[in-house]
Image (cartoon, rainbow, N blue to C red; front, top):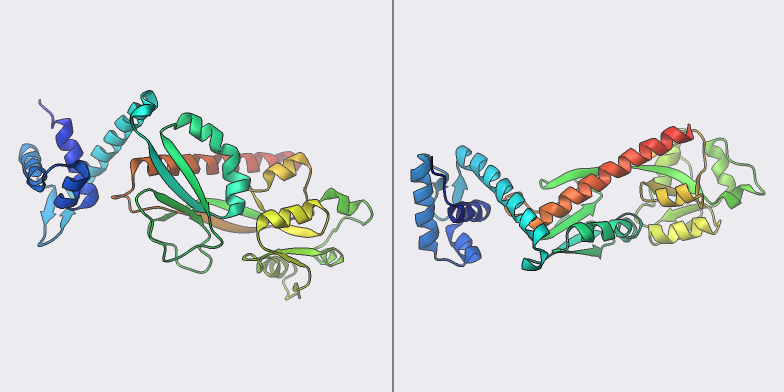
Length: 307
């Protein structure tokens, strides 16, 4: 049995992604009439409608959507293999928005391995101070963000759960007794991070179950500065794992309490709609998902070893 030709499947993938024959034609650099004709031929060949043609827009039928996802995945796999074997044939950039702390502490140490595996993708990290709920991502943009009290966006998925725990330099305990209870932390300076300055209030409220005045202490603009202050012995900060795991593994920082006294927060990955996301962007999404899974596994193993 003959199958649809590859060029027609690529046209279908473009039309299904854009939901517009004219936009698909512009992407493929062919005429709108050619796109429309090829889609009629494909529907006739399959003996099934793939599109619902409205007045000025298209939508996929249920069969069309299922076929689009299968064709998109197959073409994406074919293009990935082609780029790996012939990297000079195609080059694309992907922009990833995230905080400076996430970039410096988590992503940059892993970039070399990503670049070795995906030489055709230029991954650009763009740091931000806070999530912009109104940011509209292009087809080659992603964003790691904390939703806070805002509703989870439609095109966002949970990337990882961060463990928030009090950490400090071991030098703090040379001349002072190590804290045994949450109340003992008042003997040490608290380091607050702008943007996360409610963390200490939530931490004390959870572990003391009472309101505590945590306004005193050092307030810094960013996690990287807070880590530097903690490394110098300037006080205790609420570190976010897995981002501070390197400092814990090296012994530069230590968890204050032997018994877990944690908070948790979820980081989300915002991406373009599935029907518009570029293939290279999907590659970065998979890399980030795998990296998050590895971090969770490493975190669990470290916790077991410390028990």
